[in-house]
Amino acid sequence: MGIIFLIIIGAAAGFLATRIMGLEMDIITTVVIGIAGALIGGLVLRMLLAVMGMMAGLVGAVLGALVLIWLWQLYLKR
Image 1 (tube, rainbow, N blue to C red):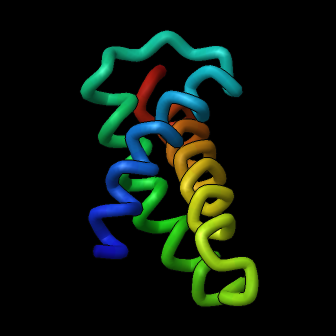
Image 2 (image 1 turned 180 degrees about the vertical axis):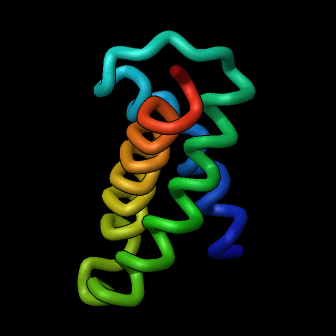
């Protein structure tokens, strides 16, 4: 159930991350980056900040998506 929750949150996190970074991306890329960011950031932050519970998952999802978008812009979109 936790992974499914992170995937759903990841889709929203990808949308938020692209808006925060001022990018216009297609929906598939946005969702994939958000899901990957949610899985990476959410799991890491949940391990480190278990006290915060689900809020750590959302914060981690957005931060993970932001990092992935930054890396994507830096290395893949030249």
